[in-house]
Length: 103
Image (cartoon, rainbow, N blue to C red; front, side, top):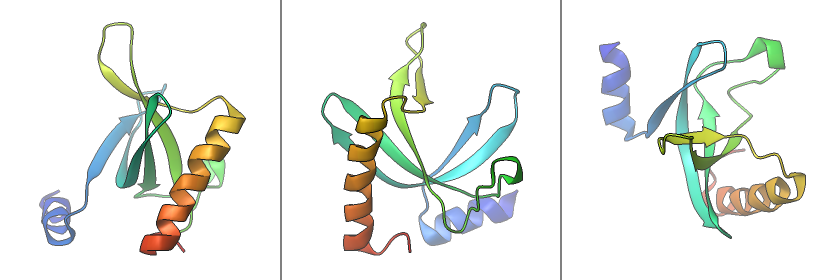
């Protein structure tokens, strides 16, 4: 576990842990975040592969919206609106092209 901390300091990575509905914890690197319309969005790169979903951590990022739960606690949620998701993804892709973050 200390190796992860050292790597985080060496590469100055912003890491976040997310817990799914079944209680499984996963680590992500925050590769970008933006404010768009009335929301705040994160592009996260998994630090693992999700074989059950066919997600390869080397080539796939995921987009989440910052929201509050019923208790006012911050959470990240998937975006249900396909049009909004496409718009946000387009902004992230432009940022990645500018910064050569994701190939």
